[in-house]
Length: 396
Ligand SMILES: [Zn+2]
Image (cartoon, rainbow, N blue to C red; front, side, top):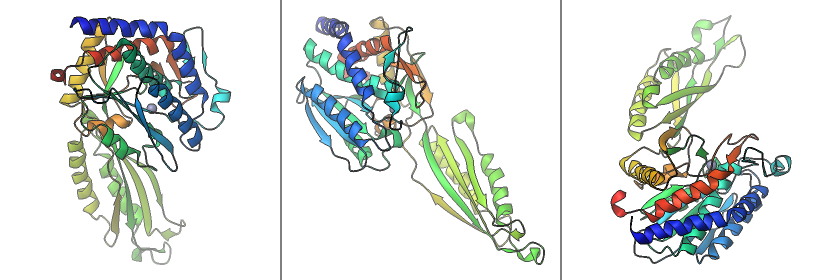
């Protein structure tokens, strides 16, 4: 560790220690602004302006990408023009809660030092941490790399109704590493893998006929589908993280008619794109087979979501954070893989080193029981700031 960097880390830590109250206040304000993904665009946009203002206060350039239906997207550049590659801080400003959530479950800290409130963990703690890292780096005179910020306004529905995914993909271009301040885990597991998902609808068309008068003339679509379901379910490969769930089924009209229609919906999760491709081949084989003559099978597929694989660049960044955690006295962290999607999946799909789950430690996302460990907000801010300061090109 060079002397300047050591000094810089020291100063950052002092800044965090001296601004605990400010961080708590900022966090509280973010939680108190309701920003549900479904209908509270104004709330998300308010958070967006608030964070932009704070970042401009440290000299960052900010840009708000207006979204029509969902919350706006915040882009910011702090220290633009510095020679080294930038680091990217990722997050989202929306929550999953309905209107009134902050009234029913207001921000508060309990006697165990845990903070409660809608989005307190997912991920208003993370937003607070990211903003105060920039403020602390600014105060400490850090000048090695630019820091870019990309906070989406609609992560909770996977950017389905906006162009936010494209903005995120553009934002991560050319960065040295990305840090996602999503929900942290109580056991200090840092996320290095997130499953991708893929959905299919399968329809079988049969031939309807009266089940008493002319059953032999019918072609039973439910029967055909049943064979297929059993074979499809057998493709589950939990060991390699590939799972398939036939989760919905509809078919038939009345009990005394041979059904001419049956439909299923399938949810597929995967940890590696390659394994998804292999699975899809097997699925196609099954669906191409006909068990009941005279039936026809029609398949509708969606586009697979991005998957975050524990690739070499991802693990290199993890090991860098792990080393920094030991060096700075934070303690032990460990790599974990989880099921849910996040923007890290998009960034990882571009081959960029990214680690997720760097926000406050806590539990209970997407529920009123959600809580975040207050002390971890300061600890994580120090850890990730130090990870930025100590980031060398050869590490990632
Ligand atoms: Zn989240």
